[in-house]
Length: 147
Image (tube, rainbow, N blue to C red; front, side):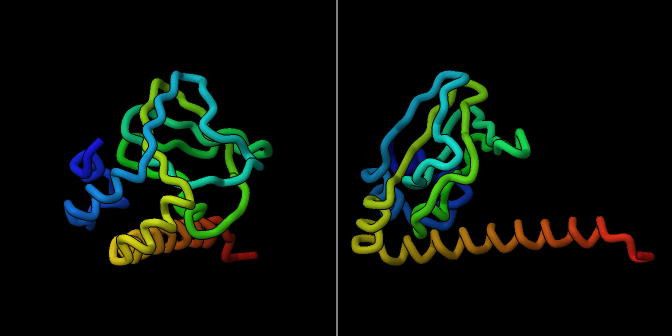
């Protein structure tokens, strides 16, 4: 894999070619068949996954299917920065190819590519803020103003 392969990921869209090339050296490629489990709810979160091909279904025990990740999307950004457990189970809904960076690789990035790490954190916070706003708007829409 090369840095050019990483350009298609929204989370990496503002990275330079040099940053992407350096980051590509830290990634592990993972191929899944449909039905393969990527990770399970409750297990230790070990890093970030970029979905290059395929579709990953996300479920929670109490809620069932809660979403999916498709090519160009990332799963588990927060687990790079904060230790914890997975809050969902991720299963390949189709043959899928992913790239994984673990926390150790991320820490190496903080030393070797500090500007890239800042960009990654800014983009994550932007996406996180948008998701929070959407969730808040949905909550407001569900409130009965007459009650």
